[in-house]
Amino acid sequence: RRAGDTVEVQIYRGAVLHTVPMKLSTRVMPPIPPTAALLAEERHQLLAPSLARLVALVEATTPERAAFKPGPKDWSILDIIAHMIIVEREEQTWIADLINDDERFADRYTNPSAVYARVEALVRVTGGAPRLLAALKTAVAETDALIAGLPAEFTAHRGSYWRLAHDLLLGDHHWQEHLCQIEQNLQAAG
Image (cartoon, rainbow, N blue to C red):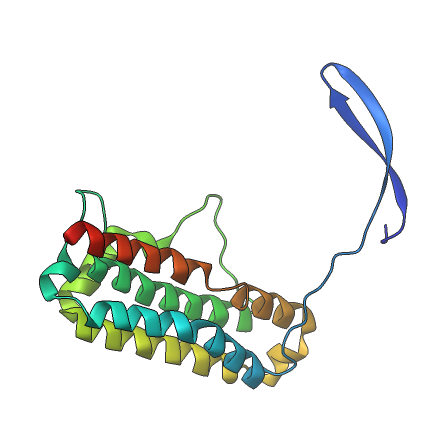
């Protein structure tokens, strides 16, 4: 079927089956940067304000407040930064999988960036907010460089390239969520 076609759809309202016409519409495809270098730059510009805000919040706090956990199951600011580093690393893995046309899948939703043992290990090994921030900046720069250096064979495959670009440019909602969490941690720490 194509956009503009009308198809018959059967739906139940309670126990009664109804058949109704439904016109298929087109999906609006948001524009994406035409080159990998422009995609990397657009992603960088999208995340830069949030990264700068994160750095400002963390640099203005003490090591004790950065390690403070509001509750037994809550994350500290250090944990949040470690999680963000892991998210960048997972994003790099996903990009590499797309390039290799070997994307992983699972039968259930899993979030390897939220495995607390992994977050805790990174905090323990990295040691302190300044080093975690440096590692996060490096991870973001690595992701940007990976995007900028996408192979021409990959960017020529418009469907895969569009999907990658679309997902990378959805916004910085994840960053904003964790910035709010950090602000709440700072308020709870006093």
